[in-house]
Amino acid sequence: MPHFTPENFERCSIGMLLGRTAVLKDRILDWHLEADGVTAAQFKVLIIVTQYQVDTPAELCRYLGLDSGSMTRMLDRLEQKGLMLRKRCPEDRRQVRLALTADGQRLADRLPEIGAMAMNELVGVLAAEELHTLETLLAKVLLAAGDPLTIARFGDRER
Image 1 (cartoon, one colour):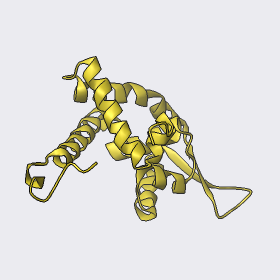
Image 2 (tube, rainbow, N blue to C red):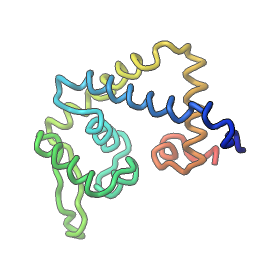
Image 3 (cartoon, rainbow, N blue to C red):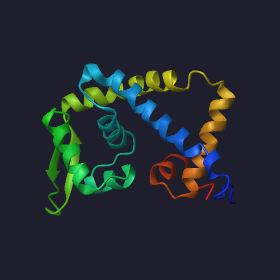
């Protein structure tokens, strides 16, 4: 259903609002993760690995919408920090499997607490029903676009 035309597009602010909200979310996450020496981008990788049992760089690229070069650099940094390991798959040496180190698992165990604090800071101004409506609407948009993380979380019930 088209909502915008070239004539009314200059009054459209949905893109700006979504983008600015994403920037704010990452800034808040960065602040909460600073003591652990992890960035919001690295938090996302660790969350995907732990909550969705993703264990290959290719899957991470698909879930996070990153190219393989960016993912390689991200995994390099997580390895340098002693949080993640890359291992060759014994059955197919072309494949790389990801695993958390002991330090990585300790941090991963704390990520839900850190994430909850950050998200409460981000959306604490919303009433519970407003938050539910916002989540429902965003999920609907992402499900319609075939977003793999949203499908993994909510199923494809709205597609």
